[in-house]
Length: 408
Image (cartoon, rainbow, N blue to C red; front, side, top):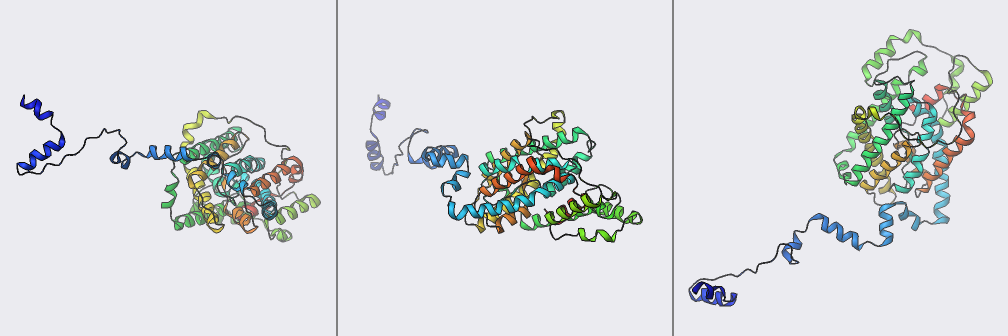
């Protein structure tokens, strides 16, 4: 009976009884762990906050989250921005045509695949990418990685080599999308500028040495290490060619070099100068990537290329965003690059990323929005449809000049 009467007392009565006995009793009200009290809200899990933010977003905010291009199309100033985007897009597009063919050759592929890589990914990135000045497409460093890795697996002249290069684009795109969806863009903050600068400089040296055989006229050992390349160059020095009449090929720019070299070949037909050869005419056709039986062996390569692509692309994209007064979301940037590579792989593209040199030219030419990237894609599409017969007699030496001069 005493136990039942004690249990029936209120909390205030218990407190009064305790104080009468010389002790202070503190009564703490009990809450349900899933209740709406302040104690549970302070330790609310991250997903509840995310759900709350998602519910608060309006239709336009949802559209901007899914398609970053909505942000700049809503505020597009047609009179001020259109002229700047057209000028920048045409300038970089003309620059991209010889670069794309050169980088494809560096990767061990036919030049047409460089143009394919500079076509579909540009349109896709303009829609899903968050940078407004980044110029996406084939780059020297990724092309060199493709060549070094795939060259040790299959013969570069085989059809399987091309299939694996395209499959790499799909794998790199999937990895980039996963990193974006998992919000791993913060990892880029731990990579210092010194690391990026040293990595890029060393890559430029290796790329330049690996292509010097076209300048000297004899074969050089294929390697990603500097010492074996230098030893091979010195060992074959007595086999080199010298022709003073070809000094004018040192043109002031990539396009000038290509034009002058092509005119020279068409007029004189010199047998000592190798040319690009026939390039298929027309836009790339939709096709599913092949070579999935080699998928597991390509995983380390895809991870390496993904890391390099992130270093190149996000670094320059953040710098350009700061200069142009807008904030770059690294996670959206990774997702945009991933979607561009995935879509490109279904149209015969090998891995693409942002280019330092073309992005810098795009910025200096006054690009305001991603429309400049769409203009670049139109230039490449026009070249594929109407200009490929003119590329047949482009000398190989001029393409190598294009690789070395504007690195990366």
